[in-house]
Structure formats: structure tokens, C-alpha cells
Length: 258
Image (tube, rainbow, N blue to C red; front, side, top):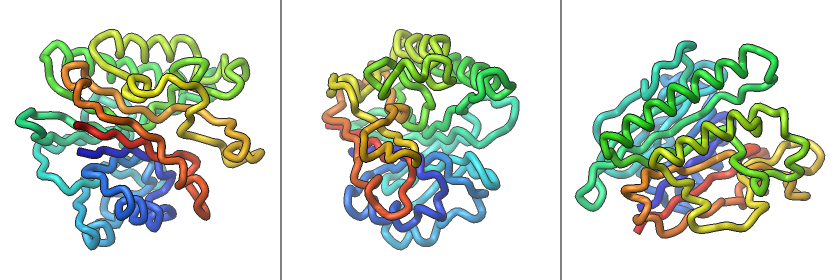
């Protein structure tokens, strides 16, 4: 089974890229973030034409998440956590894989910048709620795959020039500690299970030729509950999409299960 996750930075602008990706890589699930459209305006029919269905938690102009899929699913959930601002940042479905019930979640964590504003406090509260949810799921021994834009740089090897990011909401130590606590409570950073090398990024700013110079960040992740981490065959960052015309500033991360 193949599951990809991608912050597309507008599903309408990037629709041709999404279709190209689905045809080329043939994931069973494609988790999208920052679709920037209401659910009613999502391109359901265009996606359906190439053999995929879609579940969407949209929002006008910004945020928004979706799951595109070609497997049988159940238990669609648009409210994975209690978001006090009611922003569209999570969507979950269940799938039966190898006779195991696995919950797949697409997540778009708040950015949190600037750190001296309410945006940062919102990010902290949001992450705490998400952490509580994941810890409870771990205690119940449920099987989870969480893919998305976490807006968290886990470690220094995950960012170009880490000293420039010390007081950024993506790299602040208290944010990284929450990420580590989630891992310690029963989850794996899947990419780091298969690739220990630095300078592997999923995001490059549009400015200053950041992609050409590989001045990037690894902020898009797949977390797996440890009780299914043995299913991981490979995790790949699909950088080719960043070379297309009018690309997203993120590229997909692709999880391949045995």
C-alpha cells in the first residue's frame, strides 16, 4: 500500500500537478493539506475521472485538508481534535489492511508565526490537543498513520542554517519537545527510520532560489504508531514536483508499506 502526503498550497492551482502525481505514482491514498477551498468547490469530478474518490474538510481561501483514495474506507471523521477556532485542519478515515484496522489522518498543523502573537499560542494549544488525542490512541493500542504538514522542524539536520530558525515557531525548542513527546508516547518518525542523512527537505521557500540551493526544511512527516512501524518498506520525498511550472512550495512525502 502506498500513502502520500502533500501540502499543495491550493488544490485548484495545483490540480494538474495532483492528477499527474496520481497517474505517475499511483498512491492508494493521497493526503492533502492547505487546499484553500470550501468542500463544495473541491474538484471531485476531475479526481473521479482517473479512478479516485475524495473526502474533504474544506475552508474558504485558506487551510483545508482532504484524502484522495482508491481503497475501501470507513468512519470518516472531520473533527479529530477539538479546535477552538474551528479551522479545517484534520480529516481521518479507517482502512482495513492485512486484516488490521488502521486510521489514516491528514493533518495541517498551524504555522504559529510570529511567535509574539496569538498565532503562536493557538499553535501551542492545537498541538497539545493533538498530542492528547495521539496519547489516548496509543493507550488504546490503536493503529495510526498520520501524514501531513506538521510545521515542525524536528532537529538541526532537518533545516538549512538551523541557527537562523531558533526563534521561529517551526523550530522553537518547546515545539520540538512536543514532537519528541509524541514520538516517546508510541509513534515513529517514519522517514528517519529509513533515512538518517541530513539535508533531506520537503519545503523550499519561493524566494532567493531556495530550491536550487537546497535551502529547505523537513516539516512534512509521516508518523506511524509503533505497533505497525514494522510495515514500513520505504519513505521517499518526491522532489520532482518542485521543478514543475507554478509548483507548491512543498513536495509530497510517500510512504510505502510492505
